[in-house]
Image (cartoon, rainbow, N blue to C red):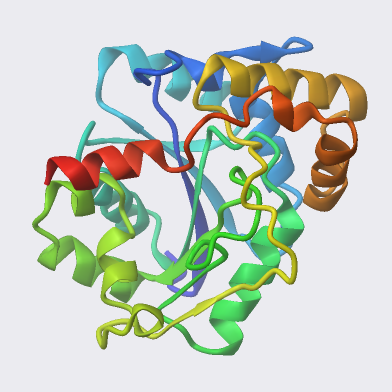
Length: 253
């Protein structure tokens, strides 16, 4: 297996508590997961796309759909998502890993490519557009070396670190004042962090449905963002807290 591979791993499961089977919901007869993957296929910097799902019986449908669509999949731990990512990355011979989540159907492939380039040009352990949250929720991209993932996999002990994959890397990055991982943030001049293009709750799905029905599935993140603002679609889901799952995990540690 080629060790220079840039492998995108998107995590997907059926067992979401706030909106069960959200990635299998459909808009115009297309699953959110399919929309997500079709956009990611347009990336020019990714060598391979993997859907990392779980060993739970209910997630066999995700594996079956990936097979139907010609996409590789990997089944791993339900709650230890860090282990799921590590095992998937190791199996597919990744040197660079791109992490996105499948509840972001309108992820921008050009954004993905830009963060990958930032990581590689600067030889970073970790690069992302979330170290400072200025992009819309739903456009989150993280890129890291396999060596950084492996170190996190070996050293991370907190349940939140195991559940959220890159939390240990971020917490110990140079960007956060740490020393273990060299990191940079991909910046945005404007702050769009109050805009939601992710699907965590029914109101999110309502917004994404409206957005796709009005603009289709091929626009850039900034076109979608401006349309949401100009048409006041953000009124639909403005009261949902960003990173609610992460905040809950940190509280439970």
